[in-house]
View 1 (cartoon, rainbow, N blue to C red):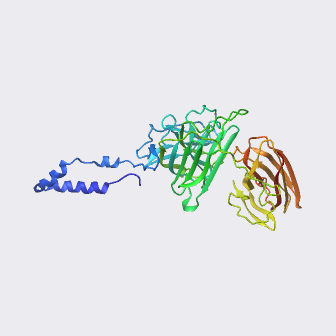
View 2: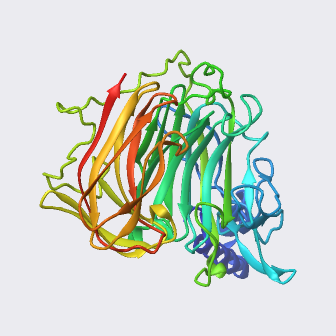
View 3: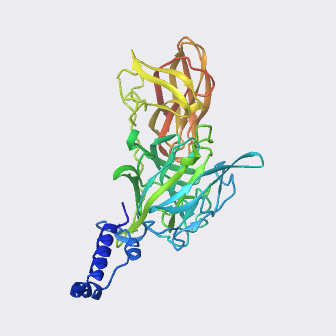
Length: 473
């Protein structure tokens, strides 16, 4: 692996010296050996990993975790009480039970115990704040995530001075990798910014023996003025270049704020929280370890900071004025990709979707725990401030049931342009119509959603003639 172990050479050298010492006639050989500087086994064991070069970059700093303890010249413990953010359950501690180095890897371990008669969780979080801060560069991290409901490992970055543009999310956040313990086949890369809260997220999947909990994967971000590119194992996951930040009601700060200030890397393993949910009986805390093989930060010799925010590309409507593509489901399409219609399952939702005979047909076998547990979406809707839009569709179900309809903002903190609206779905075709006025910032990625989870309904739903059209503007 990373450490160079030359024990066989040491053994041979030791045997040779011993044999020569026993034979007094071989003094020349012995003298030749002992006249050269010797390398002890301890010195050989301390040979450090050679951090590789990357063409076009200079190494700024790295931690290969070759020692026997965390290097506190590069990292801080960051203790926090339970519930500090996101309704997470863990206490972050400074204990070496939660943060330690083992076999050339940093380990952040979540531990379940009991306190005051209730389950109690401790875990580890470390940061480079005020020790390894930097402005622009390429961060490369190799890590293996733990598997288990409620576990939430992350590799991410925050600004050295969080108050410079204002508290989160105005200050900005760069999430190189997040994964959920119950879905370790998916890794997410995200940036947060704004006010109002904006975000952009990409994801990548690795299954089976290649999942993010089964082996180490390499995660990286190339952070430059005006653009960030996220990779997993060298594969591009997300490119961002159109962020902003502002105080509510005021003009945006000059681009590329807030990502034009020094940031630092941090690593943590959360337990529970709003996104992954809490641990359950299936969570094996004996294996709740987030392992980091190395962290490497590189910089280019120089960066061009004279950048401008790109204009958002707004998609044109179809010739009939509809922004929904394949709204009458006349064409069969892949419902798993990110083009046009997509069917999604989360948090226990089970079901399937297919296009047949001019209808989208959604069958459910488990409604899951969230309204979005069974979900049909259509992205890329151009939503312009001050414009009005009309949403129409025909819908029915095999048995009467409910469905939640909305237009959401995946890149703007999931705010709603069309509020979550519960509709009663009858057994005969019924047309629904909604009008909305766009009052938020321009957004080229509004998303129409049909959410069919949570409420105990699993009757098959049929949808057709879906339209989103602009009526003023």
